[in-house]
Amino acid sequence: MMGLGAAVASGMLSGGLHALALRASWGWLVAWVALVPILVALARTTPRRAMGAAMAYAATLGLAEIAPWLVPALRRYFSLDPGVALALGLVGLALVSLAHGAVLGAVVALRLRARGRLGVVWCAACWSAWEALRPFVPPFFPACVLGTSQAAVPSVLQIASVTGVAGVTALVVAVNAALAELIAAPASRRRTVTVAGTIAVVAIVVVWGAGRIARAPLVPADAPTVVLVDGGATQAGDSTLDRYVAATPRGGDAPTLVVWPESAIPDDLAFDRAAWLRLSAFVDELGTTLATGAVGSAVRSDGGIIRFNSVHVIRPRHGMLSYHKRLPVPLAESWPAALGAPPPSLDPVAAGRELVVFDVGTTRFGSLICFEIADAPSARALAARGARFIVNVTNDVWFAGGRAPHEVWVIVRAVESGRPVVRAPNLGTAAIVDPFGRAVTSARATGGPAVLAGAIPDPVDTVYVRTGEVFLPLCLVVVGAGLLPRRRRVIPPGSMAG
Image (cartoon, rainbow, N blue to C red; front, side, top):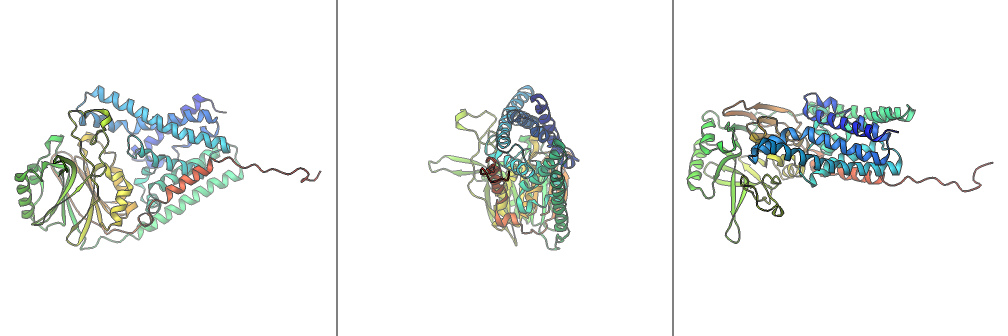
């Protein structure tokens, strides 16, 4: 029986390996063994000590994976002293991660009390459900999802087109659980069969995924084209209309769409007539449709003004249509009234109400702003409503030149929805990703304005869009059923021969 100290150490080791799987270029390989230490510990410890192992795992994972980008973002976004940003980030992350770990530990403890063991299928369902339910509570963002470790392995990631990313997590966790069973208990035929069966399922998924990619259609000659413009702003206040007008190339064959990133225009085009006249004249001269991040607004019934984080789409001589961000980032864009007045550096925005699909000539696209790309239902809904591709505008300046945490979701959402995703950042990685999660073209800003141009592949239909979220409810059923005590067979007296 493993003691509390060893169980906690095993949880910390798995938390560190899980974080490494998400951050290292070769992390996709680490992911297949990252959970083995904690799963072995859970098989050899008591239900009460399992809680400590799970909390240590979740806390280590949260601090190792989220803190490296959250602390710099807090400092830059709220203009905080570095020490204050570090303290707030680490304390907040620790508390939230410990709470998440306590939930996982409680469910694992109930399973151990009911059945005495975890099981490969139950572990796969449990981790998938746990990851999917975390965004319903602070910090309301699907961070540390093990399935995203496979973004660099398209053949594995294709299962997301059927199950969503939860199926990728389930596959990876199942391998970890099978290996842990083999290590935690003496070898037996049943455990050997379990490991072999799990590996066989992975092999089938990989072969199927590779075949799906091999059948990918070529980019047609008449495919829509896009030009992504990064104005090269290194501070939040650097974005101006003049900067993006100057950075946008003119002449040559006009693309289907030009995209400027989130917050490219600080002006409210609905009220700033001079800015609107300047921009509309520029679009008329450009001769192509422009999609740009900007301030949006509307008039309330009481005459007040509501502000939005918006994407405006301006067609030459056709006026402007807008999409208002529906999922503002808590504390960064929206501020709970219970916390009093927001900080001076924060100008809260309201949440939009509707997804919008824009028509541009013969093609259609929808837009998701910044962290909205991490929301699977939004991408799935755009695909169901006829969007041919998705435009994700974002401002990565807050991450101090590092990799934005929502960048990986562009790949995942493309596979799930079957829609190419165009990522248009400020000070980040611009990319066009095909429906199979592969970058058609990409470039990272190195300072100063940058332009990326390319053709957008055709979309493909996916089971995930047609059926919606089916796999996750099945995971919840498996987890719930696995918490019911096993029925013991009662043999009536005298039924056995003496």
